[in-house]
Length: 335
Image (cartoon, rainbow, N blue to C red; front, side, top):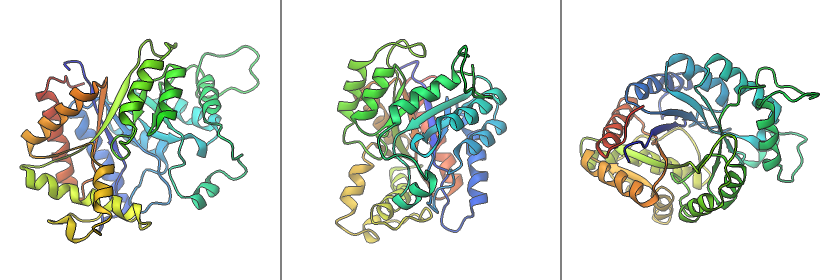
């Protein structure tokens, strides 16, 4: 475990009672804090038409974070490629790579990251068939070495070779990442059902590529760390409520935490939400450290990415501080 990097995934949550501007300021502040704590990467995720998430313009926000930090890698976890033309993504991330050389990552997802109506608003005129594998290859070509006689060139983008990751919550992404020889991040923080099988499929089917010689698997874990176990569960109640609201078609700002989440969620919904968010370390420092170690021992990832939506910004920073201390306590070396 001694060389295991730990990273941070931020959805730029908009808490109840806060503004989008405040949420974006929190992103910058948390990124700077994460850099001091030894987090290796700071990733942001594309979502649309959600009043509780402020990272819709993901590339813009990545530039905001990269400009506010000095050494931490910054990237997407991820860009939902079906919403975009590969050339535009190559130009955006090529620009970021030229501005912040050696610090930009490009994680790509196949889901639209939104509802059907918004999906149509984002990609008018696109064909319904699955073009994701071809789009990934096309995008990588735009950011690769210049091709003699190429009619279309990404400027910026060409020659930047921004590291590309495949994100997924099913076997599809695992198979594609293995086939293309790319690093793979599994969305175990909200969709753990296929985790075991996906890891096996990715590792067994991996083919070395120009970017990567051997498999590199990133495990996503929710973390809600407090001074004791009770505080950790209190902090987690906001995300349980938010996920339940999303599942029942009522997304909104990140709810305030409650002492007893069972008192505010329907009995039929809570078990579903708890299962979806089961890859979670929650509690005081000793408990969180033990739970993180259990997940790492079981899945043997090459990297861990921690996330967790907490209503109070100061409490969220403290949670990621305790999480970093826990990771270092089990032998992980800070960046």
